[in-house]
Length: 376
Image (cartoon, rainbow, N blue to C red; front, side):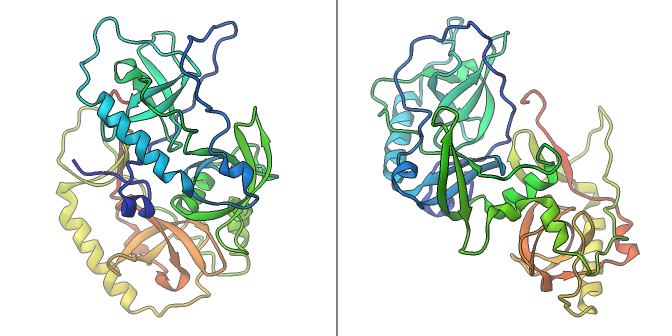
């Protein structure tokens, strides 16, 4: 089975870190008493964020500027030890029976992750009334998912009680303009910062010492505060905003439709991107037309398409041209784009963008978002 890594640094070090979709958790009903469990300092996170004023940290999982998880690098050895012990202890464990262990909200357990079926430490955030699943936060990585209780075990005594290796943070003094973070803003910020090493400056610790309010930088001059989608849009003021190039219509499918697919991108069991195999020749013809079109247009830094519009973007891996929607501006000369026919995204320089002609916008978006039935 292919191993899915959360970032380039993760892949290089071969860590068992995996990304997953963020699921909203439910609060614990008042008066409900938690079961006794092993004591684990869940709320404080790695102590490095409290003892160093500006530690270096790897952004592991980013749900929004108001909620993201980082890993301070000195925890790597502890994480490797814990992960190894978890696999030794629970791999090959007998399948669940009618007397399956039922975890309680607030308890730290051993949890089998759906993407690779390996075991990790997970904090039980809530247990629905039917007691068939539990909302789990993987405390060493920051990702979340709903897990069947059959894949949850009590944490064994031999597992070291090291602090969580992922520390929850929120950007100090930054609030969403509209009262909540938009999907576009969260997606753009995730592309810009997930997997990057940043410098943290801890301003305060709140919510029972669980959440660190921070300022953080990718460099001395690039702050997360510019993650606001409104700020990204303002970087385009006075330039060619490309407003006529709106995204084409998506492909539509009906319940009961059957067709062969090519999977182009997998983020989680509920976020899979695919293409119809029957459209392969159409996509190939589109790519040829995009190549011919872009070869005749010189690069121009004055072409600054507005967020939400569509243009041609030269993909960094193969230098070929693809249709892309502008997600956000990360700086004056760099932009985050999403490839509408394949489902992936990246940050590119403005010189790698070209305007699209109307005929190239006629074909519907070929990337089809999917989810595995029964996994939500």
